Image (cartoon, rainbow, N blue to C red; front, side, top):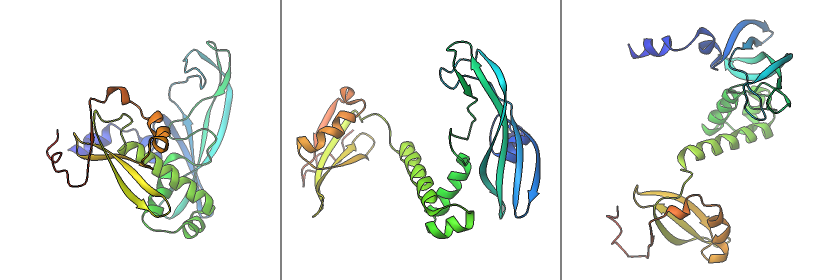
Length: 228
C-alpha cells in the first residue's frame, strides 16, 4: 500500500526522467545511446530576481548527460524558455530543477558518478566506462562529498560546545576538535591550536553568538561524560 501511494504521487514523466516539472515527449536510440526528449512544464521565474512577472522571448533546447538506462548511456534533450523579466528588466533562461546552470550533466548523473566512485571504481576506469574524463569524475566526486558534508554538518554552531586539542601529524602539528556535547557528536575539526591559527575558522563560524556553554576538555577529565 505504501509503494502504491508513493507511485500515485508521481507523474509518468517523473518516473521516467527522475526529475520534477518536466513533460516527457519521446525517446530514440542512437547506437549504444538513448536520447530522451522532454519539455519544461513548471512555473516560470526570472533567474536574477526570482519574479514570476516574466514574458516569453522564445524557446531554446539544452542537451545534458543523464543517468544511465540499464547499461546504455543516456542523454536528455530539454525544451525550455527564454524569459524577459518585467520586474528587473533583465533577460535570462529558465532555471531547470535537477540541472545546474552551465553544467553538461544532470545532478542525478553526477550523483551516479559519485556513488560509483565511492564504491571503489577508480577514476580512469569509471571515466572510460561512462565516456567522460578522469578529471570530470573527480570534480563530480568532490561535489558529492560537499553535498554529503552539508547534509551531515549543521550550519550553526552547537549551543553547548566542547573544545579539545590533539596531536594530528608531525607535518601538520596539532588540530582542534569542536564537539556538540548536547548531541554527543563531533561538529568540526580545524588545524592548529593557537588563537592565531583558529581565528579564520572562528570568524566563519555561524551562530557563535548563540553559544551558551563552552567546555575545554582535558586529558583524563571524565566529568563531561554525562554532559547535557
